[in-house]
Length: 405
Image (cartoon, rainbow, N blue to C red):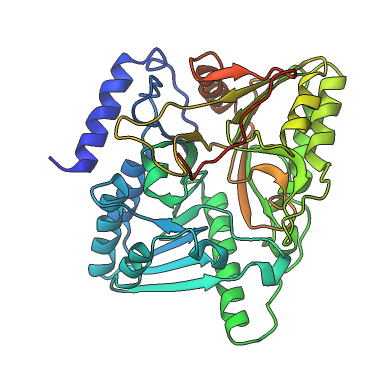
């Protein structure tokens, strides 16, 4: 039996058992996609797993696949191994593939994985030093197929993201959003060519600020957004400013700090100010972060937030896999927000400086009660589950060492 069939059967079995199975959380043009870390008690059987969706997208490609990623890492026998097999099959049947990788992601990538990708027929591989454009990186994780479908999410092109990390993304068929994601890829692909030729990087045409209605894409950095794509750094505080009752947020990392090239962390208050302002006017803030968010510089800011009225913070620690320690895995990596049961936010940014201001990231805003409720339920499952613990401001927490046992 093929891996994709197994994934479908597993998903169907979970759907039949899930209490959410009788509800309709889909909305036209957008499918919520989730990676459930293996060896946990988490259950999202009504949502398809990332690996199965990527395989389906690659199998259905007719002419073109465009992939933008931070880094790439495969592992023999993994779901990612099968995903790349299907990407190889697409290239062999004549599909033109463009793969754009962040230069700083080369150090995080597996050399064998990059070699395997470069060997795929009809695949053109490029590396973009995004820092030369804005000082940031390509942190977005996305792909576009035939200009008709797209995927945006927290999932890196990494075998761990398909099996051992809590991830959330969107398969998108909405015509407007897909065309905008395609325009972003084309912009960055052209930027790489210009830098390689030591030519000026073309800037997108300027346009009017897009309407903030329905379901729409925002991205960063604003200077390199195509016409019609809003500014993530502007939109996130505005959405928080509109909240009336409750905001649920799930992130890998939160702090009003920014990583600099010299590893310093200057103050970055854009998001933190909006969160604190919402709490001050009575909005309930339920912030859930990973156990990688407890280093000595970030933890004090979390504690200063946790003491405020209307703010609750929980730290999530996932159990080790049965196979033993896996570096840079077993963590929550989703970047989601739900507001008042009315608005959902699915993106690729952590809530730190260096993401929404100068790095390439993509976020989707859905003003949809159905999607907001499903994203809220996804948050609630972790929040009320065995892996989340309330942050105690008087406790000491171990410094995170995600790459060490």
